[in-house]
Image (cartoon, rainbow, N blue to C red; front, top):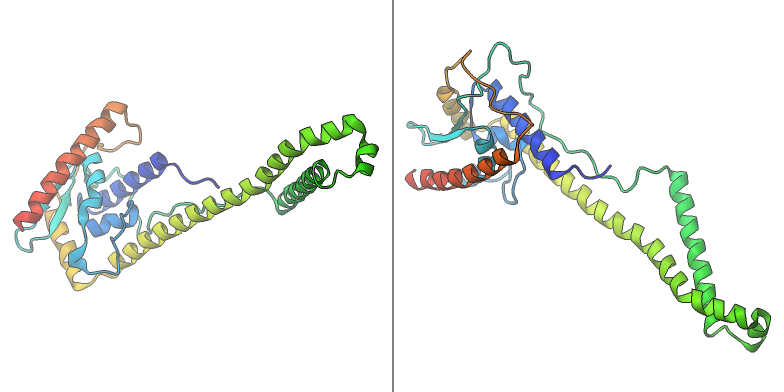
Length: 260
């Protein structure tokens, strides 16, 4: 399968995050969103809790009209989404499983089709090599007589292009395979990282339990008054406003960290 597009992946991430936020009463901490988002390098579920850079949550906070607030008692940052409260009409409850990207495969062709393509590539290379040989060092007087002037001219004219085509025919699949393997490794690493965060939230440490309690305490009490704050249909203007909000939230986030 081809790699999932960035836009499609982002849409799924935001939708999954919205489900979790609703299920949590409208207030979450960064660790609860980590199993569903694109984690930047260095955000490790097995690392020091105090060293987690929470800036990776800001795009989804902006997209869902959330706000960062600091729990007065513990000093933990909690993300509050006043409009994403869980109502009786909500069909989605937000699962515990991390968002998973589909595996990237080199080709959807069958083994027989791949074998036939490989055999054709070898045959092309063999014919091209023979043409190149007889157009140069293999062009003995006897061969020249056998081919005739027209045959010699044809072999010389076709040898170069035929060799270039056959080399490209065989080399391109190897290049594509290398790119597919690299993309698959990246997908696997992201899936493993998100699952590690899901496991960490499912079995929280003492420090994380304290953060989760702070989020639960700050959850908005707006049952029945929330509005739909997220839709997968977004206009270009909405996307531009979201980008501006991300920048504003980054600045506000930095101020929160400095005030702690």
